[in-house]
Length: 297
Image 1 (spheres, one colour):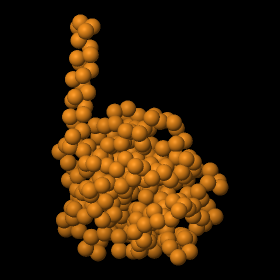
Image 2 (cartoon, rainbow, N blue to C red; image 1 turned 30 degrees about the vertical axis):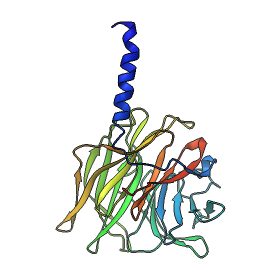
Image 3 (cartoon, rainbow, N blue to C red; image 1 turned 180 degrees about the vertical axis):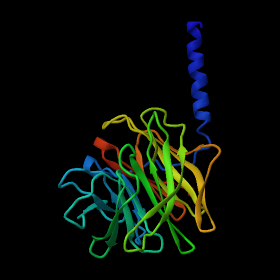
Image 4 (cartoon, rainbow, N blue to C red; image 1 turned 135 degrees about the vertical axis):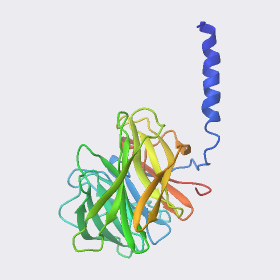
């Protein structure tokens, strides 16, 4: 190949690259800075009954570090750390799901599948610990970063995901959960591999997920090369859940077009609130920020 053809190849590649981005939804790039502290990096987020407030979890592991916090978009100080409601601190909280039908009640999940049912009191900004349970067959080699509770027709289901890597796909699991029994049990009914095309290196196919009003699952795929980045994230709609004869089924998408792209942040937390998707980052040594989709999803 002649040396003078390289500039032309680079130019064509740039045209293709930007051409592939034209179908992406607009994003407000004015990220709201939450904190520059690594301890406050956000690994899970969920709405509260106050439209300005979001509960968040942190993947901290050391004694004395925060596990949970509250973001208040209407306050001068955007973030407030909350005391964990128990003497034994959870390790590496990676996901937070609200419990549909219960106000300000959530399941926080650690990467080894340990789950904590917590209730938030917005009057006192305190938490109560209701129950603890563990996802079956969790722990290494699985590294769980996504968890959701789904309630339909008086039935309750759970879905969770192993994040994956460059060399392995993510695994999306689902099944029924006896959330309201004295002893909480999860029946693992099925799973599917998820392989998302971008980012390309240091990838995690599923860093978080949420479900919209059409039962579609949205997930964040990230590139995480280290504590100082550089980071990349893409948001995908990977399929939808349906219920037939009281069983939950997942219909995976034929293709995975990127819906949103962030070239400088690791979006490790997302949640859907009304017609908006809320994105929050675990940018490690660079801290955390929060952002919103402009025109819905």
